[in-house]
Length: 406
Image (cartoon, rainbow, N blue to C red; front, side, top):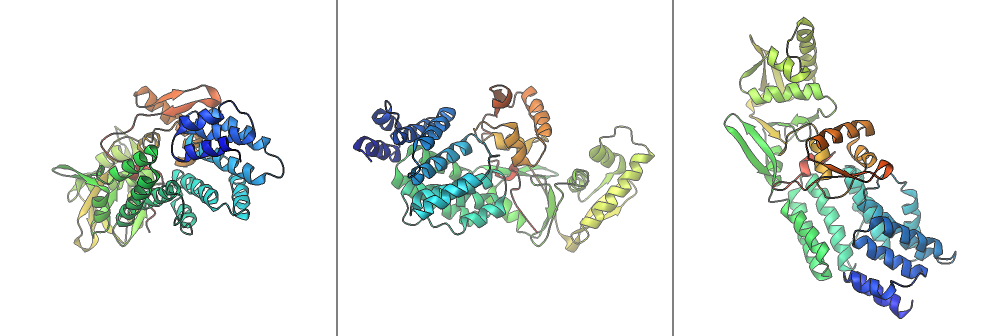
C-alpha cells in the first residue's frame, strides 16, 4: 500500500471525507477507486459509490481476493443505505468467508453487522438476535464497536427490553466518543432520544395518556389485559394472542376494549368490523360468527358475553383492560414508520419489509402521496419514496414484526 492510499484510508477512518478524496481523486487504480467509492457513499452519492466499488472489485486481480471481498462488503453497506433489500445474501456470505480465512476480523464483523442490520430492517428479530449473539465487539476499532452496540440496542428496543437497550446505548455512546465521527455520534444521540419520546397512546374514557417505551413495557408486564393496536394483538404478561392476520377480529376486540366496562351495540360492531352503514340480517349473522371466533381465541384471557344491546368484554380474574393505540392513526402507520427513517425506499423493499404485495404497497403509497405525507423521486425502476421524519415521538412500536410474544 503506497503512502497516498494509506493516508486516504486513515482520513476516511477519522471521518475526514474530503481529505481522503483529495489524496485519490485523480487516480483510477483499484485501491483508489475503492476508497473513492467509500468516500462517495459517506457523502450520500450512493449510485456513484456502488459504481466505483464495482469497478474496484473488477480491477483487483485473481490473487487479490481479500481486496475484492472488502469491496463486496463496502457495496453491501451502500445497498443497505439505499434500502436495496432484495439482493441475495450469498455474495456477502462468500466475502465473509474470505475475510475470515485471511484473518481480517474487523471487516468480517462489518459484514456480519450489515447482515444483522438488514434483518432488523426486515423485522426478522429472531434471526437478527441469533446472528448478533456470537459477535464480540471487544478490541475492535471504536467506530465498529459503536455500530455493533447500536445494532444490539435497536434489537433490544424493538423487543421492548429497556434495560439492555439502555446499557447498549451507553456503550455505543462511549465507543462513538472514542471514534470521534460526528455522524456516528449523531446516530447514537438519535437512538438514545427514542427512550424519552412518546411511543404509544393509552386510550381511556377520560381521554388519552402518552406512554414512553419503558412505560409501554411496564404496562405489558402488568396483569392488565392489553389490546395493542400497534402490533394488532391482545394479551397479558403471561399470554399473548396475535390478531395481525385477522383484521376483522382485531377491529371487534378494539371496539369492545374502547367501550369497556360497558357493552357495544351490534350495529356499531358491524359498522366497525365490516364498514356496513345499513346492516341487514346477513351482517348480523356474520357478526355472530366472527364474535364466536374471537371468543374461541381469547378464551384463556377473557369472556365475551352477549347483552341486550350487543356484546361486552369481561377479562378473567377481574383484570383491568388497557387499550394501546399508535402515536399516529391510519391504516398505513407501519408504512409511514418505515419511511420516517429518512432513507429512500423502493416499493419492492417496502413490500419485503412489510410482508405485503408490491401492489398493496403501491396503493398505500398513492394514498399517502395524495395526503401530502410522502413524495417520490426518480422514475420507473429507479423510483424511490421519501417521507419527512415523524417528529415528537418514536416509531419503534409501528415497525413490522416489532415484538414476538407468546
